[in-house]
Image (cartoon, rainbow, N blue to C red):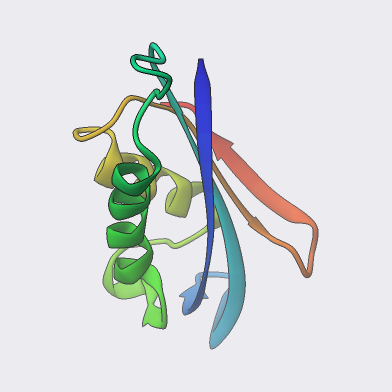
Length: 107
């Protein structure tokens, strides 16, 4: 069984091909898998607590302070690295709704 949690954050970054600091609105979906013990893969509150910790790391930040080259792909990898020691993630999806572009990381 899989469950998912979505969240959004706002952040700025620079990239080698776009050296001016600029910002984006990001949407994230984290998918977690496991047996539905007592009806839950993981209680919603616990899943929320894990993803909220990561959202707070990213929200209203200059992403270059956290990720060397903060592309959508590398942001997805960063989120995976933050959460995978704690929960059984199967996928992290990061996208920019205004552009309809994103990345999916499956470890």
